[in-house]
Length: 497
Image (cartoon, rainbow, N blue to C red; front, side, top):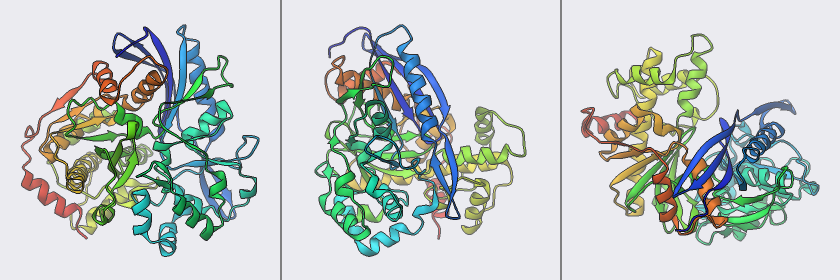
């Protein structure tokens, strides 16, 4: 591995709850991170045709990202490039002059209700899965596009750009489609890493969408793009793993290929890194997704609702009771009996914002369990349920892929939740390594560094830098004394129907 020392890059890492811009300085085999901006990811509600629509406030989002990049450039260190990663599926319709027809829809908007069923009545689900290998979620881009097929303005739409590419195009004026984010659309052939001509033709013909015309050219992560002309000091915008999970998985600090990962934040992305997709009927039945990663890899995983359920519950509680520090909540929950109440964290009722505790209570009652009575009991229910759902997802992924694993890596903000990490080790019977906390931003920065020639090598070399740059914590199963039989009993309760 070769270095230039020091070399700096700036990453906009945008989650569906909050975003930040991180400056990374590479020197002596390590990358040091510092935050130049942090902000809430802004949503807006718009009433149109008698329906409340949920959109992302793109102008405010862009202003926050641009400010973070400018602060990085004014830090006294020469910034070599910038890049953007975001959550998946959401997009904007862009006119020829680069303006948006409307703010991008928020994937939690209800316009896709019933749309998957409509699409599958026209194109068999098995046919779509054999091409795209994508987990069926109501907000997948293909379903959003079908939901919006009757909107005015398609004749004015020059490009449909997924969110990281939309932000990049605002800075550069050039629209592309990076493959890891494109693999969340349901329109990409995951075996060839190209647009699926068959699916695009089917969707365009059936729903009157001009997809052949508006989908941009695909690029792989690590592609050096056009300069960010809207910055005071124009530097190249790099296409990194535009899907935040793709960037996070770059930094899994593994020394073996026998690992599973959990990218833990608003969502938990739980799965394996493979060389080829798993497109079997059994994989489709279990609703696993095949999304693309760096250097030809496939991220075979299950989307689990994640810490969104916890944070949304806290928002509900804090409307009527004083705020409690998160560490205190987890500490109190950890003192309660384990597995007293567990639910399926893949239940779609947990997707929209709102009164999460009431939904959890209903799910507990449906499965014949005692409903939590206190905030601490709800917190314990959520954390136990996450660990239980991880257990099922990892076991099923290994079975579907024919892969044995020996360690689980948790990266991202959720790696700081010590109770969740320990419970994951208990549930799976495998050691858990937690960290890096800033996995997504770090992965974004490392791919930039390699694209700009400051690093060389493959994933193993990038992960070596991630290990050297991170504080890691190891959790060993058996510490809490919860037996595998207890977990098996809990699994039957949580997934009872």
